[in-house]
Image 1 (cartoon, rainbow, N blue to C red):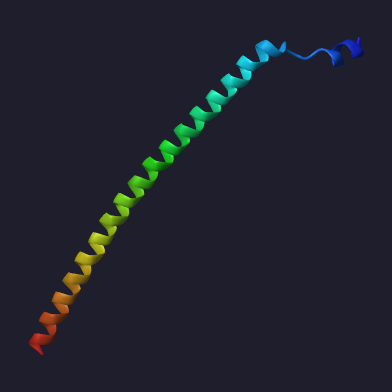
Image 2: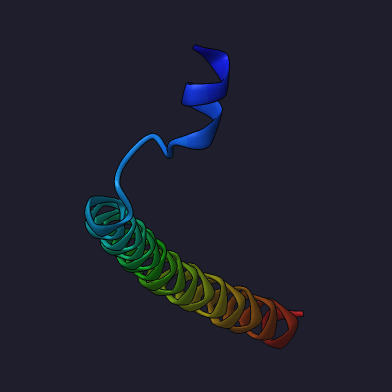
Length: 74
């Protein structure tokens, strides 16, 4: 019985090719979805970072203006 199981493949080769192709398609689809999710996250992070940089620049300008006004009073 073991010799018979070892000699025959689990699936006939003509059917196994379809499953292998299907597995590759599913794997490729998962990779594409993963890359799309990572691209969306990166875009969101870049947008938030540029917004924070704008806030920091605005704060620096306000502090510089306040320091300049204070120096003019003295």
